[in-house]
Image 1: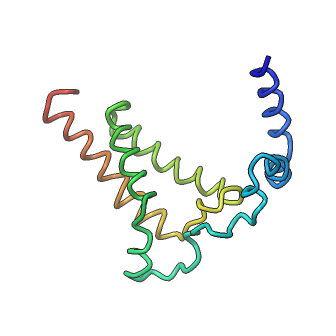
Image 2 (image 1 turned 135 degrees about the vertical axis):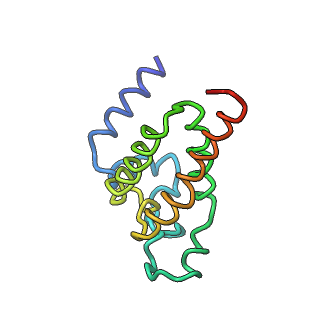
Length: 136
């Protein structure tokens, strides 16, 4: 019975704007009623392509990208499909940045940090390890 009530509650939330959903969930967690960007690091604060800005963006999300695509290479095991998928994932981040503020990134962050410095090396390393140890 509780599962059915929870499911109906989630369906009700899905039919409202995110701001209203946060307002409703704010009764359960007061931190949800705060401003979205308050205390969140957004990656489009300063889009100047400098070493300091690039270095500032090496954080846990960089490691998450690395781990995600390294492990995905063990599941998918196909170089072209993985590359298509990770570029499609960047387009997905672009389409959700108006709802999730931490998806807002500079152009060089999508291309340099995500695609060139984390996704491609992680996929390549994962596939190389599979070939080296005969897992493919």
